[in-house]
Image 1 (cartoon, helix red, strand yellow):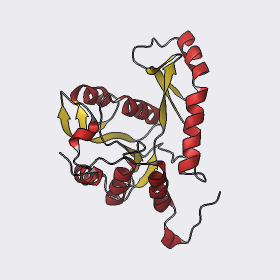
Image 2 (image 1 turned 90 degrees about the vertical axis):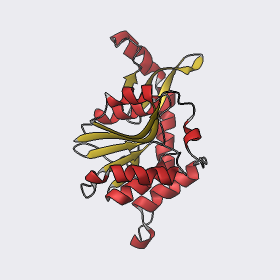
Image 3 (image 1 turned 30 degrees about the horizontal axis):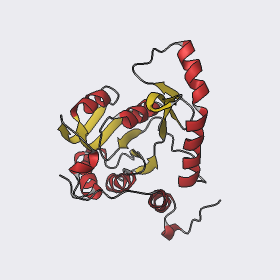
Image 4 (image 1 turned 60 degrees about the vertical axis):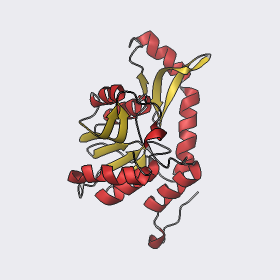
Length: 219
């Protein structure tokens, strides 16, 4: 049981100290992991950004994910979808709506900055927990395609099955607890308050545009 997300972040940071001073790129999955990512980036003297991915749903069935898309428009098929030209052509036709939502979110979070390039960087993808693991799987797939030097998945708690799925996609997985009968992520925190977009914007703005620097965000 973690007190809250910052308690979980502190414990994760202790396990990630080998990357201190190597300027790791900490990519937090919005929204809940952003406060954690900020804490870990500060401890490791790294760079904070968010990783944005969104599922591509089957027509008429929003809960049935055919795949996912990252903000660059790259599509990743769900494991049960056969990777054929016909399947990719069909799913590419469905990606416009989720891709538009991703670009809206990037514009909201960091309107004057592009995503930090992970090429050649140590990249640590952080979330507050893995239930199904689908978002983390999509995020790791998206970042792997951009050729990081090392790709690390860092979570405080995970379902055992989901942890096995992400382990195949990362060079290293740091997970403090794994449970076979998992349930919801929030059950492992005494305080699990929602993180809204306003808080995410504030955290990212403070990270990339510190007040002491005199820099002003341009619209």
